[in-house]
Image 1 (cartoon, helix red, strand yellow):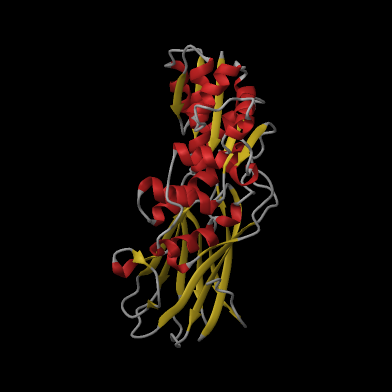
Image 2: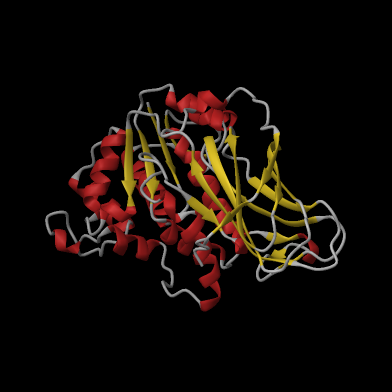
Length: 380
């Protein structure tokens, strides 16, 4: 009986890796079942409904209960990952669109998979570290994970299904493609990105790229949710580019970005640039994810660059984070010239999934005089 669970973030590495597992299983087993799961119930249903003793499960968005269950076992699991920019390029090609929803999806996967960090036996296959390794070495590692051995003829058949020319052989390694060559053959795509995705890639660099190489070890120092990742409430959810107009009644100005964060305590700093005196306007900022996680009232003292901060706790990484910026009174003039949010983990280690199974009270509402800054790095 074989049960293999592979996790990963969406991208070329996980697409290739899951395909390779299936190719090996086709060769090694008379029969096997495959299922993609996200919850513990999904996993239980896949197991109880199996028609074979050999089962391969994959998950790109494992929730807290599934990760807690997996972390209680010492069974080794495979993790497929790659850089944020490589992943988003693959998603742009896969879905033929350049929407911020792709960034949200990627952030969700990173936040969910990061819950596996406490597990002591993870086989991490990172595309950025594999480099020019020929795929027979990766296949051999996957075979060890599945507990199977391939005959030389079986290995050749697997290699051919993964992009090796039919004239090749396992004794002539020059015929065996590298990971990048194999992936390009089974999932071809144009590496050129159109100019219109430049803004999307900038958001990825600020909000997602800091997690590169730190999903399963280490700790992200900080990340930024730039203004362009938020939405304008007055304009039907258009991206919040340019100045944010304050003229009008008290209302929500911006909201979003619906990104995800790994479980744990987070420090958040809100930055505002004000070029015109707004005559004592008070802003309310809410952090929301199923429930209000924190609320802070900000009183800018005039014009200039201001920052205010608070902390909040993420318990369910699969639920997106929404930040809402409100005015408390109406205004006849004024605008916010720039707005962005910086986040950093409070603790040196992200907690285990079990640490976040029980509920907690949301952060109390806070009042804060915004700190005036000599200068602010907007990371444009």
